[in-house]
Amino acid sequence: MKTEIEKQEAEDQLITEKRQVDYDTREFVVEHIIDKFIEGEYKIPPYQREFVWDKEKQSRFIESVLLDLPIPYLFFADDKDDGKLEIVDGSQRIRTLVAFKNDDLTLKGLEKLYKLNGFKFSDLLESRQRRFLRKTLRSIELTERADFEVKKDIFQRINTDPYDLTDMEIRKGMYQEGEFYNLIVECSQNPLFIELCPISENRQKRGEAQELVLRYFAYSEKLAEFTHRVDVFLDDYIKEKHNGSFNESEMKIQFENMLDFVNTYFPYGFKKAPTHNTTPRVRFETIAVGVTLALKENSNLKVANVEKWLNSEEFKEHTTSDASNNRLKVIGRIEYVKNKLLQNAAN
Image (cartoon, rainbow, N blue to C red):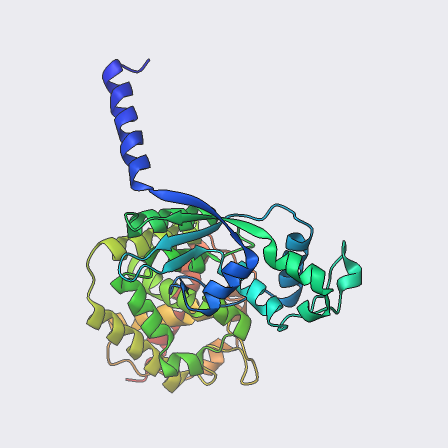
């Protein structure tokens, strides 16, 4: 049984937290939303991903609007500096509306309104075009009093569907204003990293390069603390760096030294073969972290016969796409690379 003091303290906390989430509920017609986006009144912040919806997903959204089906709230935040509205959640929906209105979207994959497949906006009857533009969408607008922490918390809560945002996109939404996330982005844009570690265009849009860089730093620094949940391990690590201090220059040099070493001694970089145009996560982290741990023990390391063990069945077993992420497997494959490099030192 809780005491009266505990009950009152809990109530006071609830009231305080509710005051921090200051918002207004609004309803706008589609045409207004499109016009404001085109006029630049809506800002897409760095933590919003690129336009990644495929044509079928865009088409299904338009179908939902046409059928008056329930549409999730759009979330905006009033930018206290310029008064424009920052899109906290809903950029994919808004950009789909704009694309459809501008005839940049041809509907496809519709099941309910299958006779509209192949239609553009201009193909609709003019009366239907007017009705579409008069459709209303609900929105929640956080006032200028809502700080970054409030926006971050809302973004995380409304983007927990794994089929909507990737883990890294959610982290981007939470930490994109921090110095450590900026370091991750800078490293992911390193020309040598891009050359040695190719990533498909679609995965690039979903934050895969930043995911790999985060894994590299987390495993390089705290491998011994890893248990079994990679996502939790990475979430804890980036949160710690975001809230604490770190040596940016030292971490950047470590990353660059690792890339130089891989470029010198690994014939295909992180790829399995010269013709491959994508890099498996497990292969990247195994080589990258293994190299870094070896260089920590021998900063002047030079090696020979890398290809011999790199092409071995043993290494392939360590780095298959379905390789386990349990603690022993992760540590085992990274230690395998580190030990092979140190054992084959040429100096």
